[in-house]
Amino acid sequence: MFPIYGFGLSYGFDLAESIITNDIVRYLSYPIWVWLIEIIVGYPLLKFGIRIWNYSYLSKGKHWKGVISFVHFPAWVFLGILLEYIKEIMI
Image (tube, rainbow, N blue to C red; front, side, top):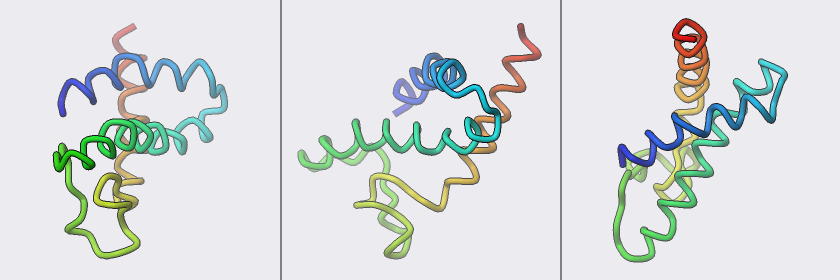
């Protein structure tokens, strides 16, 4: 699981920043990028009975097949903003 997020942190946020120049739109898009990775990796593994992460503990309508969690939307936005801030300080 950690290499997946590490890859996303290394390349995904830079890609989003280069594609989406409007800050607010980019911040709100970060959860969508995370969900895409979770679906691309998690859904095929689910077919083999492997769950890297499991959001099925959430009530119906708050997750999709246990693979992505809609509840974590604000957390992914916050993380994206925080990572952009840290990157700005480091450069």
